[in-house]
Amino acid sequence: MKILHVVETLHVGGLERVVIDLAKEQIIRGAQCGIVCLFEKGALANEIEAEGIPVQTCSKNSGLDMAAIKRLARFIQDFQADVVHTHNVTCNYYAAMALMNNAKVSLVNTRHGIGDMPRRKNWLYGLSLLRTSCAVGVCDATSNMLRRQFPVFSRKIVTVRNGIVLEAYQECNKTSHLWLSKLMGLPEDSLLVAIVARLSAVKNHSMLFHAFQKVLEVVPTARLVVIGDGELRPALESEVRQMGIEEEIIFLGDRRDVPSLLSGVDVFALSSMEEGYSISLLEACASALPIVATDAGGNAEIVRHKENGLLVENGDAGSFADSIIAILRSAGKRQKYGSNSRAWIEREGAVQGMCRRYEDIYIEASGVFANGR
Image (cartoon, rainbow, N blue to C red; front, side):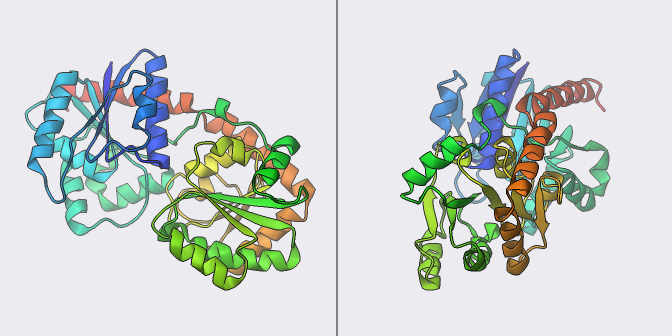
């Protein structure tokens, strides 16, 4: 089977990581894969090209770019794709237009996030579902959102939860903790809390910083490790300085060694106001970490309250602080929640299971189009 994935870019991010890991696993299972970026390639393109998977770009301009649609149609034709698998909204309506004169190729879309779309984009996406065989939500929250927005297409909507490459992660351990503490110039007895997220408004780092200020009043050896970069970094660094906790919050920026970093952490935190099916939460589970997260989007499908972590009402800095404190002060909770995290992801979160589910969808989608239904 020839599968062509369509993404906006291959910049560093959770969606992009899922697509790369999925394509690699599909190659292992005997498929032929290619990737098309609507805009530019991005920093992760070299990784996938090194695996022999071609990456093309449509160099899309702002607005509705007919030249980009023609390029995409040509890439689909040249690749002789059996399935075009698009990721998120814009990619799907561009692919639907590119396939207007090509009824043989199945179109499958995955929605990775939750949140309101501009009216025009939402309308174009809804129109593209006429040509789409299957619309996939990465969690039940996303699938339910799609059913509410597009009830006429409910029969096309299914859930396939994201998976990660578990072999890349080791459980948190003392050796890694000592290494990470030394890397950041911290005392060995520091208690390390980490967040992995782009520095953007939706991730609500500001709430986490205010919560952490309260944590420090009770657990002065705690330190917050901020992994990720983004447009808000200068503002967030300034906020931390104004709060007087710039020594206790360490910004590491974008990192390619996230699995190694997480194996040295004590607690994982995610403060998002909106979330689909968080890859960073899956990474935390794979690293056997206890988790404190906001009850946003699909987070509750990964973090089971008082089983592998604690869920907090969105935006509640006080409760977020109390939850982090409760876990930091209890080695027993850290051990229990962390072990449960790893056991759950071994059952539910491996890339192989995600790949098999998509295989079934591709086969079904091909049958739908072959039968004209």
